[in-house]
Length: 73
Image (spheres, helix red, strand yellow):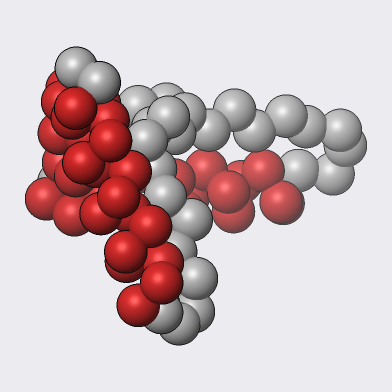
């Protein structure tokens, strides 16, 4: 499945199945796990990562991280 709109129904079908089942969910490698509370030190850490990655020629990774987590929602 590649459509996130179908995920909820797929999980419900998976849980309703009486026997063994496997649910294969595709996620982005750049997807961040967001904590319940965001602290300034975490924001600074992400900003530092972005600067270091950019300076090391990995601007594409930074852009993908931003798009996958903050723009494409």
